[in-house]
Length: 232
Image 1 (cartoon, rainbow, N blue to C red):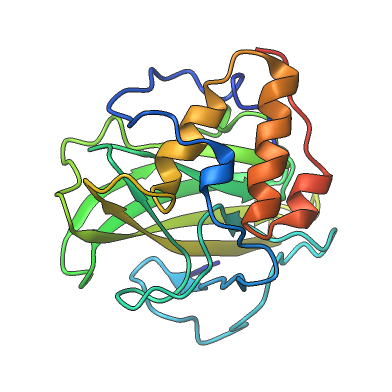
Image 2 (image 1 turned 180 degrees about the vertical axis):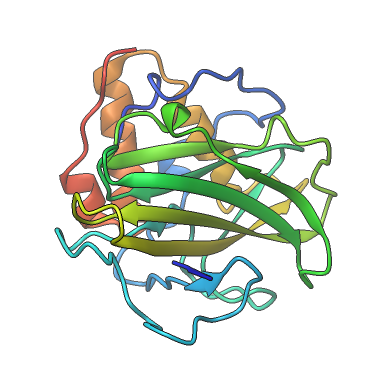
């Protein structure tokens, strides 16, 4: 079957953040706006392109925002677009989910090796842990028995089943794919660590401003325009 994220971040961040590098100032990241192009990868649960509806976005078509991984869209010679690095063995991944809680039926997170020969983590997500949507949502790998190996690329997928109407038989699928690499190098491309640091900022307004800035730097202006920060 083909399977085709702002929320407030302290509200949706019940986990303890560990193994992150020293906070990277926002101005240490290169200006990415107007240089990167978002690439949404639509696949089924086996990682294959769909045979029907290829290239469709937001099947409910209620806004111009799509299911989106919060990543670097600059081309990477090893994996192409949609990537980020981390120092964490079990990083937090971030996505923008454009659907309401009522529209969501099921969600599954899958992390695979670069050649997709091994699934290192795959779990159906509790919708109650996704927080308020539409909005930015963290996807935790803290429950994974496996850890990311240093220097290795992994491809992660989020598969959603959504109801665009109240009709129970009108289930639609949406999915995204992106890359993560665990790296020892301290640089601006260790994006997943930087997003976790922003999510851990205690002051709500400072946190909100930091999210808006990084989203604009990454080229996600439409998501930044609709940002809201729930209470901690």
